[in-house]
Amino acid sequence: IIVFVLAFACVEVVSVHLESRNEAHALTFSEIPFVAALLLASPVEVLVARLIAGAFVLAVIKRQNFTKLFLNLAVFVAEVATAVAVLHALVGTNNPVAPSSWPGVFGSVLAAHLLGVVAVTLAITIYSGRPSVELVRQVLLFGTMTCLANASIGLATVASVWDASYG
Image (cartoon, rainbow, N blue to C red; front, side, top):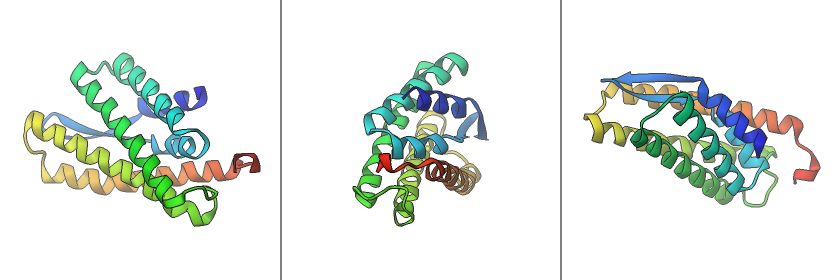
């Protein structure tokens, strides 16, 4: 679990911000360790690692105010729960690294990503008014492409080190 905490913390530090009216969607490389954690750790370990890393980086390094920190941590919980549920529904007990399981892996991470986009967009709307159509378009297009690329890297990494003892 320590490896996943460190990995989530590292990718949370580096982010790309798509801004509109002083509000921003932050895109990170979190899908890389997220895929690895989903495939190699228990759901509770994924959640704990994501929350510890997120809380540390967002509170201590990025110094987010309580409201924004609480929202982001709640989104992390929802994303992990969504990804775990979708992965379980699509892959079940099959080998998650087998090529036949890859659509389920991508589907689970994409579902989590889209849930996060909707949650943050709703928060921006409530806090500062409707975000620009351009911001939403950028987040959906660039964010989704980034999500899938990062998920590919995560899946390739896990597949390259996969051991029969995990299956």
